[in-house]
Length: 320
Image 1 (cartoon, rainbow, N blue to C red):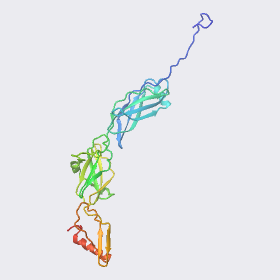
Image 2 (image 1 turned 30 degrees about the vertical axis):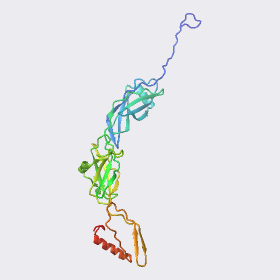
Image 3 (image 1 turned 90 degrees about the horizontal axis):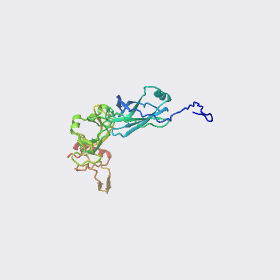
Image 4 (image 1 turned 90 degrees about the vertical axis):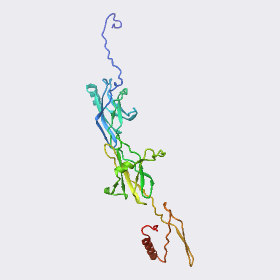
C-alpha cells in the first residue's frame, strides 16, 4: 500500500481482527439414565446427561438451564446449575463435552423428558430439542384419606372412601381394620376379612344418581356391631410394589336403641299429692313402652327400688 507523499513506495501494514462474541451453540438433547431412576416416599428422582455444542463462541459458560416436561410437553419443573470457570475452561478445551446432572421430586409412574440451554456472558443459547421420554418407576400408593361415614344402624356402620393416589401402579386391594377403643395396641386391631371386603365393597350410590362429592367413592358395611357403641377404623391400600401406610383413625357410633337420658323433671306438691311432669327424651327410633317412676322418703330407698326394678326386668328396662 503506497504511503502518503511517498510515490510508489509500498509498506506492509498489519491489523488484529477479533470477531464479536455470541451465544454458545445449541447443546445436544438430554438423555435420562433409566437405570438410575428411583421412587420412594411418593416421589421420583434420577440422573441425566447431554453434550454441549461444538463452540462456546468466545465466552465462558455461566449456567445450564433446564426444563422438565410431562407427557403433554407442559413444563412441570425448571432449574439451573452454575458452571465454575474451571469447568467451563475444561469444556472448551476438552474433547469430552459431556455434562451429567440429576433431578428429583417427580411423580412416580409418569413420563417426562428434559430440555436444556446454555447461558454465557452474552446470553442464552436456543433451547435444545426435548430429549426422549422416560417413565418414572412406580411406588407404593399414597396413604388414603381417613374413612368417612354417613350411614349407621343399630348393628352396622357403612364406611366409605375415595381411591387413593396410585403412585404409578394400579391399586390391587384395600385393607380395613377396626378397634373398640381410641388408642388400641397393635394386637387389638381387628382386620376385616379381605375376601368379604372385596366381594361386598360397592361403588357409592351405585344404581342411583351420584352427587359430585360421592362420585367414584367406595362403600362397605361392617355388620354384627353393638348398638350405641363407638368403633374406630383405619384403611390402607396396596399395589404391585407394596402397602401404603395406614390412614388416620376415624370413629363412628352405631345408633342407640335405648331412649336418651331424661334430663328435665319438674315436680309440684300439696299436702296429699305429688305431681311430676317431664318432656319425653329422644326415643332413638324405637317406640316407648313405658316410663318407670321411682320415689321414696330417702335416697337409700330410691336406690333399693332401682336395684329391684333392674332385677325384675333384666338388663333392658324396656323388656316386658
